[in-house]
Structure formats: structure tokens, C-alpha cells
Length: 334
Image 1 (cartoon, rainbow, N blue to C red):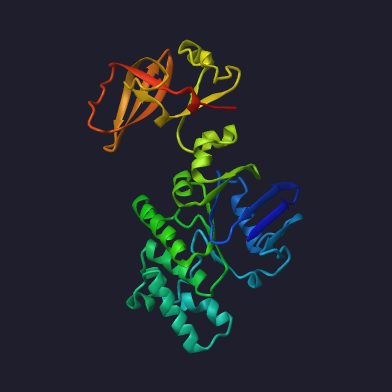
Image 2: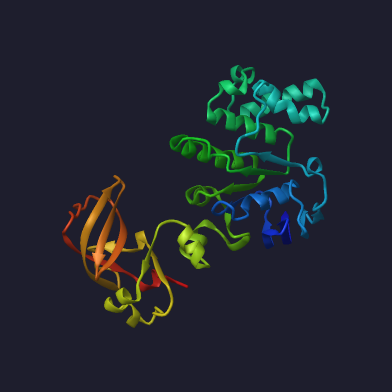
């Protein structure tokens, strides 16, 4: 549905985007993920028309929209700050785009009430000023305003970053449910790996104005294409050559000792003899989270962080000697 072909964006002498190529399918929840300044928001703004590329094309349904005016692109936008009008009521905010389109009053009223119901805003809230609403309610208003004009695409730029941690998780779930309900093609920008992994159908990981990897959340996490993606997505242990040699992991034939080696925390196990490689380790510390326990172990001078599911096994105390084990097939190398 949406295709970016060889997009390059410059701000003066600075090249913000280098040769961006990607395709987003109709109805897909597609996330641009990366650290601050990596180019993800610039790419979003290129799709919406706020930024013009110096080369390359943006197309929707095989129609080139690279130079099309913003208001003619039929794309809804939810900004990080929500960009609501504070002096207007919730109703007036949602109705704004419809009034710009000069729809009849009865049609505007019908669409606003219908959309408010879909995003779970009750009628008593419609005539409040947006400043009287909570952060989560304001986000619903911003989404309703973006969707009420029936866009073919909705773009969300860090929409949860202003919310507290508990509300962020709640609204994350609601966002995904809303997207499924409407079936609308969604582009979502975030620096939060957990958000990206839980919300997305696919993820594009950005770094220094380039895309490092595009894939499903499980592909990006379990089969990171580059060392940057491997380190940026989730927690990970870097394994030294000395550790791999001492544990005989190199002799397994699956490891190239000359490459940088990494393993996810949950791919290491404590006192589990099912894995191919194991060695003694001393518990340095642990963090108890209820559903799981995170250990820091010292094995052959290597500090390893391990996540163990809490299935009723005893908690290993600081200074206790345990066996840490892993499968060399779970090591990612670059």
C-alpha cells in the first residue's frame, strides 16, 4: 500500500535519511523504531508530506504522492504532544477536520458521536475543554480527531511518551485494539523497544538515517540482522572469546571465535542440564520480579545476566555456586 523508494532527505548539508526503501501492507501496524535522531520521525514526516525528499518517491496504492499537498493525502496524524486545541471542547476538536471539509452540521454531529463511542469517550466528556481531561483521555481525543475524517492511513509519532508507565501499558493495549477494530494501515514511531515488540506486525529499525533491519518482532529480536539491532533490542550479554573457549563453545563448531558474540538473557539457564554447554558460576546478585528472577553470575570471570522463570524453584543466594548452561545455536554473531 505505502512504498518508499530510494528516499533521501537533507537539511542543509546534513543528510537525515540515506536511501530509505520500505513497503507497508494495507491494514498493517508498522513501527519505525530507533534512538533519538535516527531518522524515524523524519521518515514519518516524509510520508505525511511535512518533509520533502531531495530524491526518491513516496507512493500509496501505486500512486506517486511525493509532491502532493498534505491535506490531499488522506492521512491522519497523531502528534507526540497531541496538538489539541486547548480552548476548544472535545467535540470541537474531533469535529475540526470535518468542518474544514465543509460537511453539513448533521453529518458532522453524527460522525463525531460515532467516533467518540468507538474510542470510548462518553457524551459527558464531549463538551469539556480538553485541558480538563486526563492524558489517556486526551490521547483518545487525538486519535478520534485523526480517524473521524476516514483516512486510509494513520501516523502516530511517539503518542505514549507523555504518559506515566502504568497508563502507557494500558493505552498501548487500547491502541492495538483500536487498530484491529478499524483495520486501518498504521505507522507508529517510537524509541521504546517494548512498545514496538508488543504492538507491531512489522518493525523497521533505524540508525543514523538508515534502516538496519525490517522484520516481524520475533525476527528482529531472535535473529537481529546487525550488531546495532542486536544491542538496541532488549537486554543482551556480550560473550568474550576467552569465555567461549573455556566453556568449549568454540569446539561445538557453531561458533566463530573471531566474531563478536551475544546471547539473550533468557537463553541462559541456571542449574538446567538440558543444554549443550554448561559451567560453574557464582551468584553475584539477583532481582526478584515475581514472574521471573534476574541473576548476575560470574562464570570464568565473565559477568552474565540470566532471566529465569519463577516456577517455584528455590532462589539462589549471593555467593552460591550454580551451573549456567546454554545452547551455542542461540548465540548471535557479527
